[in-house]
Image 1 (cartoon, each protein chain N blue to C red):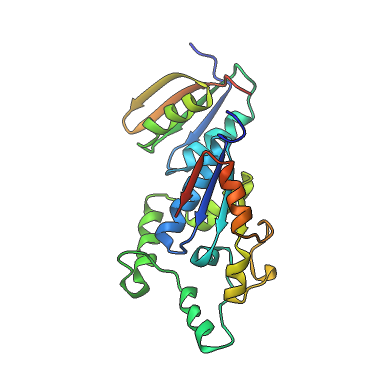
Image 2 (image 1 turned 180 degrees about the horizontal axis):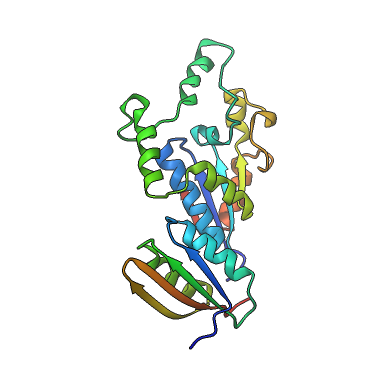
Length: 78
Length: 156
């Protein structure tokens, strides 16, 4: 079980806010800590992995359960 | 990322609601990537930087005509001004943040909003007519200096 340092509930937010809030949340973590993001925006399925990969953060998990998308992102760069 | 790769410049030429929206969506997204984002707001794209209470009045019939741009519009399906209201309502139902909110978030994220000095002169606007928190007015050369250092340059 991954140790989650912080959970961001971005449910109900539409593009581009899940990414904006994810960025702000991860800025407040230390390298190595894990952010859990919950989103209901279907675009997040592509957006969050693309964002994490481009910045260099590790996407540990991506899950979909009845219209809710959950991501685990490990902060890998400062 | 190098300094150049990490910059984005958007030339905001249009004040149409359906173009202002993507201007700010891309600006806030760029800032979320850690990019230094500059919006150069020129021609109709300057209008969203006006304080809401400031209207273009003009001092002759030609500059008075520019006052039509005081009214919000869409580039397509404007329906005589009903279009923007409809789009705002529909967007609200889908929880899409209105452009004003995205603009405030952009400023919070450090996005630079730069008004075009020449457009301000044409429209009879001074720095006091524009919202707080934006950059000093600049011209094409300063905008292009930014573009030369940007990996993403857009004209919207």
